[in-house]
Every structure is written in C-alpha cells, then in structure tokens.
Amino acid sequence: MQTMAVYNLKGGVGKTATAVNLAFLASRDGRRTLLWDLDPQGAASFYLRVKAKVRGGGKKLLRGTTALDDVIRATTFPGLDLLPADFSYRRLDLALDEARKPAKQLAAAMLPLKSRYDLVVLDCPPSVSLVSEAVLHAADLLLVPVIPTTLSLRTLRQIEEFVEDQGPRRLLVVPFFCMVDVRKRMHRELAAVPEMQGEAFLRTTIPSASVVERMGVERAPLAAFAPSSPAAQAYAELWKEVAGRLQTV
Image (cartoon, rainbow, N blue to C red; front, top):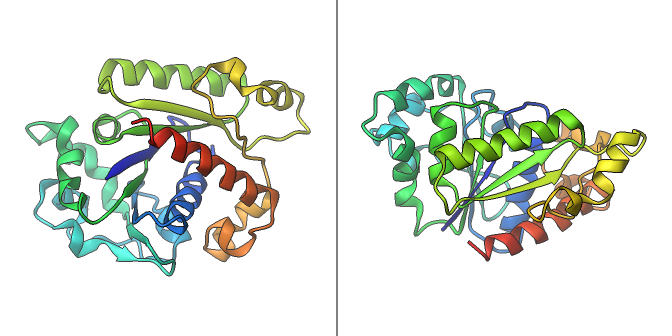
C-alpha cells in the first residue's frame, strides 16, 4: 500500500479537486483506492456524495477506539472508497497532542488497511499543525498544488522547509501548477516551463476552468461527467506523471 497526501498551507489552490480526481483515476486504473478526507470542511466527502459524519469523531479513529473499517464507505465508483470527514476533525490536533507519539499516530491508524488498498489518498486541511506533521510521517509522496504566482511559490518553499524540519527523509515532495489562468501574464510565464522551478515539478499543469467548479454541482470527478474537457484531460495526464513518481518510492 502506498500513501499520497495532497497538501498545501494555503486554501483555495485546487487541493480537494485534485485529491478527488486523482483518486478516481487511480481506481479506474485498477488500483484499490481509499480517499481519506482529513479536512473538517468535508469537501471531498461532499463531492463523492457521502455523508460527512464519523461516529465517535476523528479522535476515536486515531486512538483506535473506532476501527477504520467501521467508517469507510463505498462510493458509486468501483474500486474507490471514502473515509469521510466531519466537523469533529477540527479537534484532531488536540487528539494528537494527547498521544504518546503524535507524529506517528496517523500512520499507525492506517496499518490495518495495508492488505485492503493499493493506494490511500489523503486530502489534507490547509494548515501547519500536528495533523500536518502526522501526514508527513504517513505519506510516501506529498503532492503540492501551486498557483503560478510569486507568493504561492514562496509558500512552496515554506512547505519544503517544513518537510525538511519535521518530515522523514524518504518523503518525496512533488509540486505542480494548478488553476493556471493563461489570460494572466505571470501565470503564463511561470507555468510555461515548470522545470525552471526545479526537477521535482511535474510537467502537467491544471487550467483554471469553470468545469472544475461544477464538480460541486455534479458531485462527481471530472472524468465521470466531463471526460472530454481540457481540465479532465489535464488531470488524466497529471495522474500518469504521479503514478510514475509513485513507482520510485
């Protein structure tokens, strides 16, 4: 089992759309996939039409009082399951703070899933917290959506420093440009040659498109309701690159 976390310090960068679309594409490729919605807003749970309610809350999940199997839900898409979030997840930091080894608590909670799934995708809340540290220790690959602006690139550097300080050395940080608006000169210039930002950057860019926003209306991944759209095709290319990176970890 491999674990990929979709993470950024900033909100509104296409994180949840990326997590949902890539999880769907992974399952369509034949990987037994679980999407764990760690964000108390529960957006990924909403997109996949699963009620954002976890009996006993996230605290009992991390402590092992509630078995993950008891709260995992099948989606309408074959091979894709969801572990939903609810508003109790806003207290996960407190639950981790009470644990003996908070940074390793999430990884420990996921151990029973190893024989059941090929890939776990973590949709992470936009913050620097004990939850973030636990994600670093649970993930094999940290996928970072970056809007092509100076401040977003600065945030990426902060994430890289955070991983260097708090994460395990094996963790692979993989950024890519998301929500690219070709009408904006800065977006065009920064996203035109992503390798200029470093070898870690993926070559695929995700456009800013209204069809991505329609995921909230259709409550489905792009490939399920708009497979021929440029954004859906971009996510398909992104998944190919991500799958290639996963083979190296």
